[in-house]
Length: 73
Image 1 (cartoon, rainbow, N blue to C red):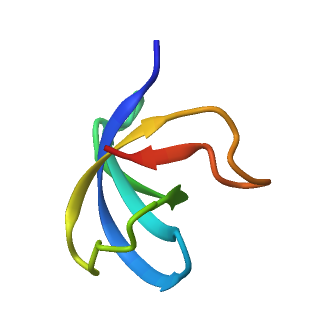
Image 2 (tube, rainbow, N blue to C red; image 1 turned 180 degrees about the vertical axis):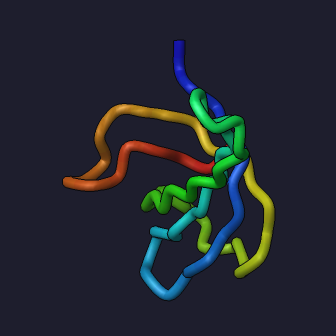
């Protein structure tokens, strides 16, 4: 099953590649405090039509390059 997540575009200055930020909020087991973790992923963007601050859904795929394993839906 391919993973699908929602993220926000933070950088789009590369050709056919954008950087997407994904935020996860998780409760700490011992202290009960909520912790926000951010992951930045390079994502394949075939049409180059995405702008900064757009919310997008991305899907896991076969490796496209050394670091790209995600595509924009």
